Length: 286
Image 1 (cartoon, one colour):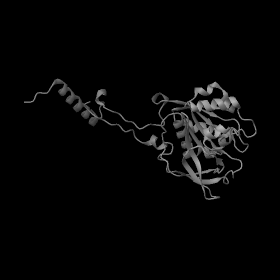
Image 2: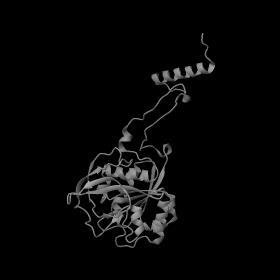
Image 3: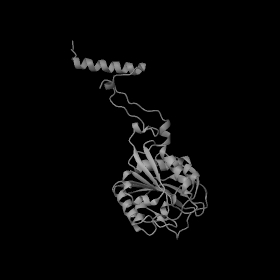
Image 4: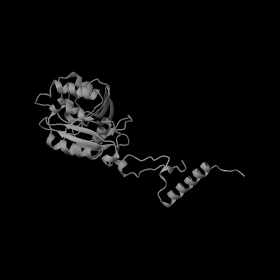
């Protein structure tokens, strides 16, 4: 007759007890779980997930862009991912401050239309921040910030060109994913939004276009969202977000939320992931 060692018997016993506990919904011994794989939860508390600090820089824009209305809506959208700790600073001059380095990502939500840009120190500080691994997100007319600074095109990927047709008339249009598989748009469906479809971006820096829309004026496709790397930094640029209503549109808000997480070094989480039950892989006896 084959004799079983005490270790073999103990392993078999723990495996059987764990299986019984699972079947009967009784808590199994902690060591009986070989692996636990849970779907990420965008609503997880800060104590349950790694956090990142994001600062929204605003406070100046073209008169038709009401930053005092849009910035709070944008901040609220980002805060729905509890991993993101979001501050709003109402002066672009903040970019010159060493406090920028307290954050993992910066959102540019300004355009120095009539006021001067934040200055040389801000330009160099922003460039170092992103180059060293900080994330950057550009919203709507931030493409027109830092006019006359050649390096900004390399940072932003594309910039506002005043010689081009600015945008389609304000109205509804559909935004679709491109053929690029990227975590920012993975799983997102085409969506309708009411906004300005920008047609005024120019530049030659290599970018990956991940979302686009077709102009009702000229029938051409224009980028609505694209990504690039600037040295060690991740950059997301979207020309969506003309007004509070446009930013509050759920898929637009989700796109900026995903982008902020991704730019700050986190895995983007979709809205649908919140509703999915957590999957637990249970292996007994190890």
